[in-house]
Length: 108
Image (cartoon, rainbow, N blue to C red):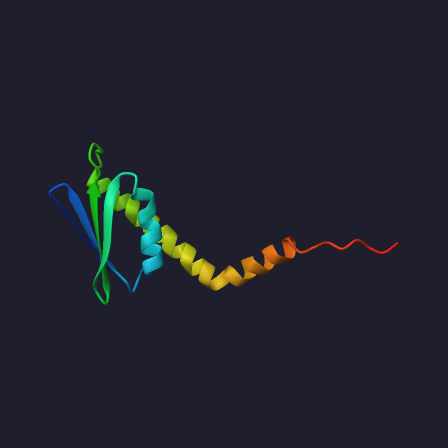
């Protein structure tokens, strides 16, 4: 089993994510909930890896090992949402279209 590479150094957290498991869209969506606590810099390390640097904001105490776990869970959640949308988004769209279609009254 391949582990994610992460490093905690100088009060910052750096995580490297393989693009073969996660889309750029899922990664950026997973980062959003952490913007209140950290400044975040995602960047493409190479064609197969995204590097994400988390730096806690001034005056905010963030246990970085807990941040790794919370981000991991959020990333898996977001990737699943993107996969389900890709597979079943058309079904959802059809249901919404049908639900909001105009209703015609029967003729008397």
